[in-house]
Each structure stands twice: as C-alpha cells, then as structure tokens.
Image (tube, rainbow, N blue to C red):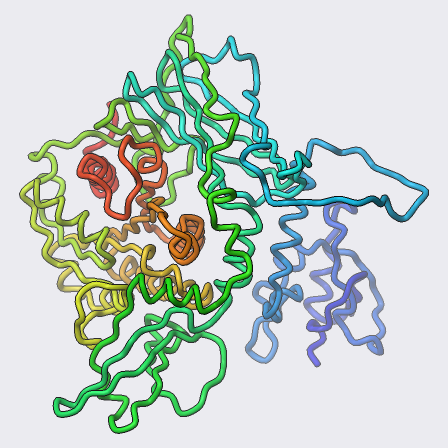
Length: 573
C-alpha cells in the first residue's frame, strides 16, 4: 500500500529521512487555520520520528507534483473515489443554511424530544407572506427593492426548508416598463427577491409559486434518476421489408441482446438501445420519432403518486398577497446607472439582468449592449462563419436574423430530438462531432462563431445522460478554442415556457430548464464560452411565455447576441 494513500482523521506522521518528510517539517501552520487534518500517511507500523499538523491546503500544495510509480498522490478521500457521494450536496446545503440563518441562538432542553400532533403540507400560495424590506417611503429610482417571502403551508405553519421555485416580476403597464426579480433562497423557508427600480412612479410586484420543494424533489430524485425515460418509436428497414421497434437512452444499467448505438465523443457512456427486430439487423435502423403525446402517455404509465404537486394549487399559482403596489420616488440627486462590463465569457451575474424600458426595448444590465442597426449588424458579421446546432427555438433565432439580410445557412437540427419531421437516424450530427469537424483552414479563412442550445428536447433525459452530453460538447468547444483562439462559442440558455396541462408540467416544466441552465453554466464555465441568458428578459416581457417567443422578444435577444459577438461595437461611451 502507498505510504501516502492511508487517509484518516488526525495527525500526519512522517519520516525525517525522505524529501517529502523534510518538506512537511518546514510547515508551521496557524493552529486555527483549518482543523481538518489527514493522519497516518505512513502505515501504523512505520514509526515516525516527527509529528506535524499541516493544513489540508498545505498538503495539497506539497503533494501537487509528488509522484509515486508515475502516478499522482492524491488527497483527500473525495479524490480517491467520488462514486455515491451525492451526500456532499446535503452537507453543502446544511452549511449554507447555517451561515445564512438569522437565528444563531442555541436551543437547549432537558428532554430528548418536543412532541405533539401536527400536519405539514407543501408551501401554500394563500398563506405565504410577503413584506417589502426597508422604508416604503424611501424606495427610489436607480436603487434595488427587496421583498421578503416567508413561506407557510396550508395550515399557516411556517416552512423551515427552502427549495421552492418562485418567479417574480415588477411592472408598470401604463408606462410599459417591467423587470424580473432575482430570488435568493436562504434554505430555511424564507426568500429575498431583488428588483432594479428602473423607473419612478407606481410599480406592481407579482410573485408566483411555480413549483414546491416536494415537486422538485420528485423531479430530481425520482424522475431524473430513471433510465430509459427518453423513448422513441423506431423503424428498421432494408428497402424490402420494415419492422417497428422501441428504443431508449440508457446511461446506467445492464441489458441482454439489444441493438447498441454508441458515440463516445458526443454521448459519453450513454447508449441508445433498441429492441432487436426479428428479421432485420441493427444496421437497418432508419428512423426514430417521439412526440409530446408519447411523453404524456409515459407519464400516465408511470402512475405517479405525487401528481397533485403539479396541479393548480401548488403549481404556477400567484401568491395571494401579490401584487404588492409600491411607489418609486425620484432621487433628489439622480442615481447613476450601474457600471457594466463589455459583453464576454463568464461576465458576473448582477442582481438584475435588465428591464423593459418600453414594450419593445429591453435594457440589459449584464453587460454593455445596444440596439443594432442593419448596417451595424452586417459590419459585425463581416468575415464570420456562423454554425448553429440546436432545436427549433435556435432555428427561429437564425431565421429572424434573415430580416437583417444575413442568411445563416449552416444550421444543424440536434440529433435525437422530440417531434419534427421523420428523417434518417444517420443524418443529424451531434454538437461535439460538428464542432470537431471545423477545420483549421476554416478558422484561417473566417472567424468561426458556434451557437448551441441544450434545453427543450432534454426534459426526459436522465441527469447523467444530459450531463455527459453537454460535457462532451464542452470538451469539443475547448478543442476548438485551443486550435482557433479567435473563435466564439455561444450557448443560448433556456427560457421559461408555457405549461398548460399536467403532463407538460412534469416532463417539460420550467424548473427542469432552469436546472439545465445551472448545469450548463457549471460545465462550460471558465473555458471562454459565452452564455446568452434570456430567462429574465422573457419572463418580464409583455408577451405570454411560449417555446417560440414573439418577434419583439427575438429582436432583443438578437441584439444581446450581437453585443457578445462584437463587444467592441457595443461598448458604452
């Protein structure tokens, strides 16, 4: 056994006659710096002459380049084996709640329990309370307004856990002004909502309970961990005879005598499995198709016991105390607008993504953007090759660009999609493969701009299959940016859509798309990729939320996109 691979809690015992031991002896950590230490680097029977207590950070620093047998010596246990360590998230949640809780008192009791008879229901839109924080008479234009949400159940019992999913909008319909709120979850049943006060005058704050914690727990712990949820009706043919079959995506599990279709570069360990036809070969697979009706039927077959969580009482329902009506005052000395960075990769997310200055113009507060003319559009896109890989919302986005006279013809419909026309399974390409096919010669000829999205067709993918797919696209994006540093990779994130019936509220609900956005930011963050986040723009628009938004919203999305592609042209003087 490696001397450094025995990892327990306690002291670190080291020899004094090896280079590592000599380096460890030089460490004199602050005893309060970190009480988490690693002990018994050497076997128990290997008596040490010196005992020190280095911090975990110091050990990491020391062992970063130390090798044994050609392999890195790793610390701590999480680096040996990450399998089945989902509990790390629970620890992180508890630490977050403790750090952000207003109640720091210690509750003592002479009895091991407090007891009684009680009932706890999901968060109630009728009982949940709202309160404007601060002096209502000092809410001024250019500042941030904060509203506190205190969640209660149907019996007016205070909820003590976070995890509910709210949407919040502040509007003045007469002035045609609107903005979405940024919601902070304290993890203890209370939430803060922040709005940027972009105008003076009256404002209506409307807050909706979109999904309860219990509904989200069902989605993430039950539905999104299941394999084979994304199923397809398959057609096999050799030109003479045809057979129907059933296919599904599997990331975890075992199987027997199935047709296997793999693409490690784009899908990782996820496998497309099909029931083998009786008379045809696996190579005779021609097409696959699934639609919303199929997904609704699948939901019914599952016999979900928690469907009530996706009905009107707990789903996309306005809080009874909203809208709150507030009055925003003009500041005696005008508050300057927020200072914005040029649009680019990994720009920090502000408390507000922006506001609608009227019903046709959105003002971003994420980065420096502008309203673009046709001439400016063409100047920005000069000598650029744009490749799009995604669903119909991205294709709609590209089609709208035609109104500027710029034809983006290189658009690829994502592979393994929902609905749409039936095409050969061998025709669509995956994002990672298409990105890897961009050659150095193409990069030398024109600046490559790749626009991706991973949202509305992925609601029934297991979380592992989804993460592996976007992770493989991330690796391909990194390879492109390394060989073609002037290229741009832009990911258009999801927006909240319409959910009109129960099945849709389960397999295509907005929390899933919100969570996909978080996953994409986490996977692609820090490598130079741009995130085109239009969630708040869409949520606060004066149009109804739909999968395919109106041309008014599309225009403002396009203007923000151009500001990311050509930030030097959008810089505010």
